Image (cartoon, rainbow, N blue to C red; front, side):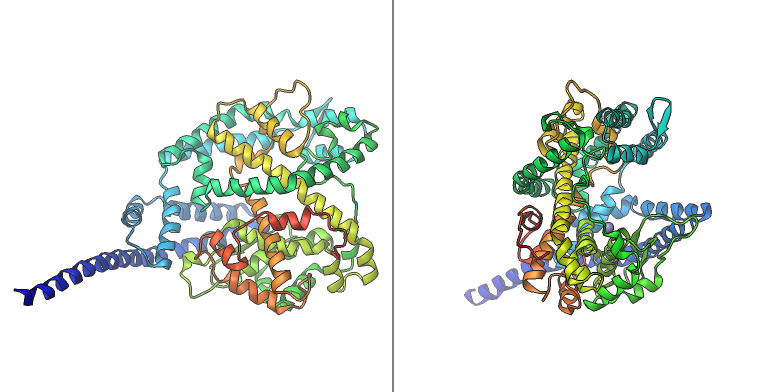
Length: 563
Ligand SMILES: [Zn+2]
């Protein structure tokens, strides 16, 4: 008997092992089969939607917009397929898809379908509510006396007037959109929460972040770190801002009100360090400069520019964006270039998005040939866009000479620092308000808003004010739970800049340094979305996303900086 015992055990062990592997193999084969059927359908739908949207933005004709709407609808309808979703759910819950590339695709595709499993009647109601609110924002005009004013006209008064009473009137007139939409927004927030709860999330904020691959706790931790690192620096700078404005308006600093900060929300830096960058670009061609720069660092953009639409045309979208039509090299940017610093920044920014897409790893599957997260491509765009007003870059690119560079360096630095700090405190307000509003839409939102504004922006609520001022920011209603990504993009831009200047580049403008392009290709662009965004960042910089380098770049007042 003994003779047969060992072989019998061996057979048993092997068969257990074999059945495990074969279960895993079977699941992975099912996933592979799913992916090939999925890609066969989704790739053409994705391309059609991207191309139709591109055409509509270029021509602006009703016909092209109708085509674009139809193509986007077809793409989103694809993800409502409940049979496909069940297959993914089963595979995900089995835990048997272990191959790293397959598992990553399973997670990403599963999230896309999960977002599509909402009851169509709830979705239709959601769109109806959003459209209604959107109309109210579009139709609203601030009224002062007999006159109706646009948002731009309000901003103009806030920026230019020195009369407190006029500033107050303009600010209050704009805030009258609040009561028009507040009740609708609260209903919309409850509706969004209901959709989230039916999908298995606690609230809509959590759902939006998680479906985009972000853990709300992780994001909050980064925002806490940033708050900690910027609080004192901002308080100091806020003191300078207040001194400047008290003088401008002939007031005591203690008497400054939210309408004294040259902006409806104090989201942009007041103009206390004016540098006229436009004059340096009057005789320049931002497209040529951007192309020379990118080609110089080894990220050739000729193929992107050849497909792009760069200048103004009737009917064309007046803004700028970059789009990846097929994730196989057809990358384009739409711009309305003029010779000024805004368009220099925009060209560098959009081509930053462009090279991220263009230099993906074509051997990866379709799903993984995408940015690690929407904020990581924003980071690359910001990293390059910032150079447009960087005197060192301008000098290295031959736009200004050494003497001019030295002359404008301190004031440029102060101005950028102010811009970044003001924006970071404002983004804190937006992130924390939205998070808390979705956690409990029944709380006193008017007070919640001012608690955030007082804490993070250090502005004083006008005495006795009890108005839905939170509802005056259109993003709260119509671009929900996304604002924090703008700030995460800035943090990552600083983290990459710090890493590259210390470990990769020979100079701080990157100009002519091919090692920079090679580093970005290998560490950021080619990995695409095969790793969780924070793992990609750790692999690329040795650390998870941190606010440290943003603080290093913009909070510490480094007067010896040669920047
Ligand atoms: Zn961008």
